[in-house]
Length: 428
Ligand SMILES: Cc1ncc(COP(=O)(O)O)c(C=O)c1O
Image (cartoon, rainbow, N blue to C red; front, side, top):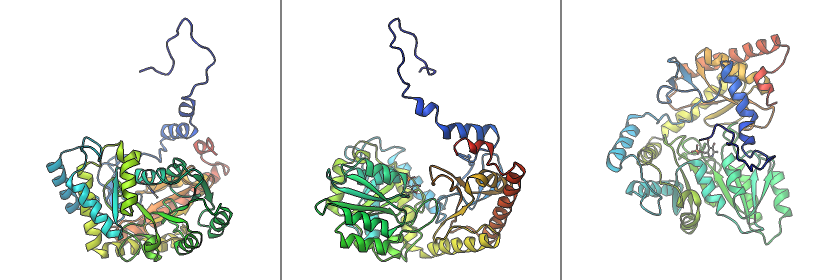
């Protein structure tokens, strides 16, 4: 492997632009390097154990964990661990191939059947991640001239999948029914139209106005696709997400989910009609040309799905914990953005986030520091998430710590003359 420059050749072409430049000169990567050098690495902080309400971190300290998507508290649940272990023993560590060749086990088919049943869909197609569920579905939709209307704040994989489709992508303003309606009104009436939104937005916890969006889809004969990565296991009486909570499930053409949140695993799925699922299985790159989900992950997701369905009180606990944390943060002077469910965002802006994150981390609470490009420039947040298994005491203690951490960050920033942390200025 080279160290970056090629060995000189006697007839070497001179003056060529370096196509690796966007990587090696990446400003976010430079910021991460400076963060690490300053002992302020808010990203990729290693843990030393399962994502439990109190988690052991790589530095050996235990902290209240408000930064995991383990919403139902099942990653580490003995029943889920046992199911993963049994799958591992029976099927081995790897499927060693694509679903369409040698990679399908009975466990994959079982999970697809139970997911389809959960959503009342004809079929479910497993993918190796939530990202790949969106890519598999959206990249295979549309004819040239068809339009995919995508919420501006939808997950990056929704945008990437739509961009890979044969249709044209039109972004509408985040959660704006008016902006969507304007775009639908302007469409060529013969063009196919697909509206794609997240049920719950991953960085802010905002929910999509699905009743209004579904009504527009009915009026304009548009298909509707909803990513329920953060709604599954949290919203709706049966935990199907915002599509269930808002009563639109039977008007949605496809739902995508990720197993890395409530299902205590890694993987994804698309729930849709049998014919559309067959089309995905025949043509989607992440399904056809990639190895099938590893058996342990499928076993874990299947066990978690069964617990989700048989213990609705867990979802209730997650929702109650979300409400308790919202109240406690407001009391601590750190009011989160409006929302419901397991994801909360405390707006701290680009100048406070890094210092507030560090103060909370040092005081024993792990949260996620989220800045551009995960949120728009200037709108950095502390992103928090609850588990069903957090105790009231843990949540109220953590809220007080976060309130104090933000105060401390304000003082630190003021002492610096109001400037953002030096390392953050690099990408401002
Ligand atoms: C809304 C949404 N969709 C999809 C994904 C991708 O899921 P995965 O991590 O399984 O690839 C995420 C990840 O956080 C997400 O927030």
